[in-house]
Length: 232
Image (cartoon, rainbow, N blue to C red; front, side, top):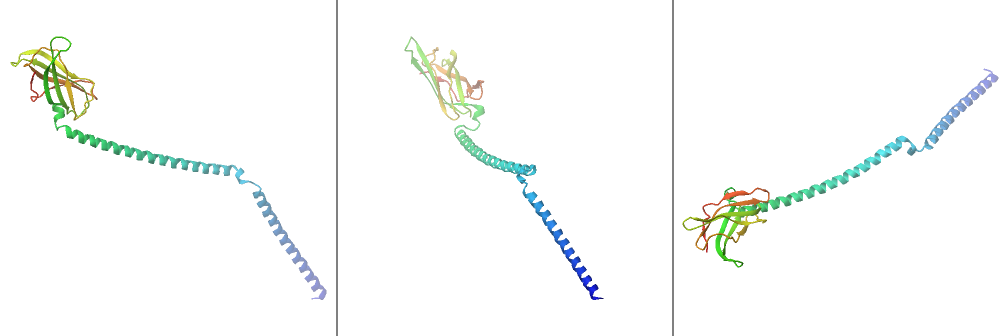
């Protein structure tokens, strides 16, 4: 190859190399410009202004709020449950104490047989301080074996002669508007304007009683252990 041809060939390759380098640099600059513009464009948009961002933010806030509500409700439920358990324990204790008190005073089987037990019974003559004549004053001490709060008692009896002749029948001795608790004793007494005199007898026959939980009177016959008493 001649020297001129060699020179021209080298010069051509040099020019071609410069063009290739220039093209590559131009391409890289274009990519960098594109990337820069893209990033700049993305950075100029506030994500908080987008509907998607606001929706997510709202859901997160709602979830946090509901979580706090659930925590408060759980704490309140736990406190209420604890309070109810304490109330139940107190009620159970009171019920057990009441049962023990009831069993202490109320004999087994007495509720159905004899709701009232006569502890003592006396009949006296009381002078009439207002007018002439005398009063007959029966006085019963009875124990409540019914297991219920009794609110009224009415004892019915006859005044009889020693030979059994009835002098005055169906005399009533009552205690009204009372709060007669199970196992306790109460006095049922009344001054009666009735026929009869010292030496006669007051013979109890039956009694009515009413409980706090029942508006109906119950009629019970006295047992054989309640005998007639001499009026003194």
